Amino acid sequence: MARDLRPVLKQCRTLGLDPVVLGVNKKSNRNKRPNAAKKLTEYGVQLREKQKAKFVYGVMEKGFYKLYEEATRKDGVTGELLLQYLERRLDNVAYRLGFGATRKQARQLVNHGHLLVNGKKVDIVSYRVKAGDVIEVKEGSKDLDVLKESVGKKSVPGWLELDEAKKVGKVLEDPTRDVVDFDIDEAMIIEFYSR
Image (tube, rainbow, N blue to C red; front, side):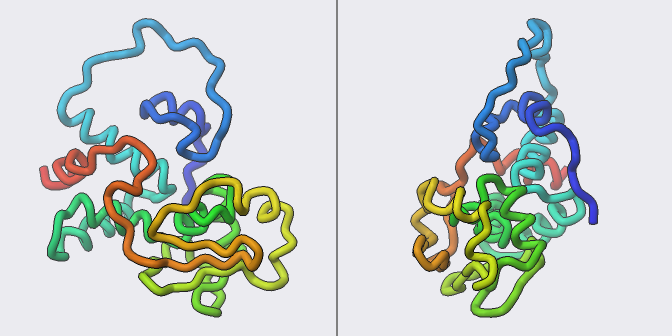
């Protein structure tokens, strides 16, 4: 399985992201170079937006392109559908429910089989949840230090519901465009792929 192993703060600086979006609570103490800001071409802006979304959600190019293709086949606004598919991934939902301090930590919880979806073990991070799905922590995993530290620390978005005591979350509805917690222009991503 391919993973992105590049330094997080360096990537955030390159993409113009605030590290807090990823759950990292420290800023880079490195001085910004005065000549670093260069005017990007239209292609460069489109590429940066695509890379930003891939980096935040932890998706590789092949999986990201498959989501784009699926979004183009559906009726509706392609950019909003793409972001909705990314938000509904199990690793992201686990992060949104507070089961991990970062998306990478939530991804590892899913990979290691600590989460159940509708009572069944799911260890595929790209599993897409739907409205009505119940995501819970496996009984033997509820005492993990990671979960004790992270559950209840951040607010849960309106499209999800969390019972902190039982460590059970429920998907109430499909997410909308306004739940995305970082600045992204999905139209640029669509333009990038439709060249």
